[in-house]
Length: 293
Image (cartoon, rainbow, N blue to C red; front, side):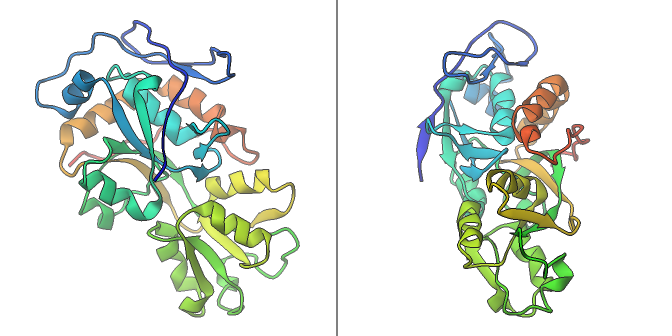
């Protein structure tokens, strides 16, 4: 795993959070942080606030959501959503440690206490909820297919079984890896990597024919491909993204949901300068959260 700390931070008084395009020397965005926070003793929020630091799991390979920048600092919508939550506990950006968290290890790092939360295009589902709890959802995506720009054979998932020699790539431990199986002629069609950028590279060099994951992630790869990739078909699933936390931590779940609800302007601004800059995306409304349990 790679570890890195954010480099830009600002601590400013205030009872509410906002994300401001302050434009520091490095051109990055800065987050206002609530000062003098107080929480009920024994809660996760009190523990984090007293500690003064957080470890947050996210992905380092997904344009628009969680991508490691040239300065080794992750950037994207998931990263900004996590900063909003951290700031509400008085945690400045410089006091966040980011832990790369691919799909296959997300539950494990939460169970092991390696992170305080995971914000990593993390679809809420029943299987995962047996091991960890989710706050949110804070965004709803949908699975789709990405192919080479000159591929006119695949126009949707239904075409995959008719072309059993074509390879379909996604990542181990992801919801898309399970969803796509029903559309395949056989399991030999499926190629699994640990991170999505390996799938994009494999598509670019012809080792695979299709990449599948959530549409907003694929749009990021399309935008960076200089015309080499395209999306085909419509989305064929609904993927609600949640914040992963320790199983049964209802108070922390409710705090996260309330924090996001109280900072919808910051949420929208975060989208528009991260995932929202990718062509084809639409600014979302914050979804109604599911009950915490």
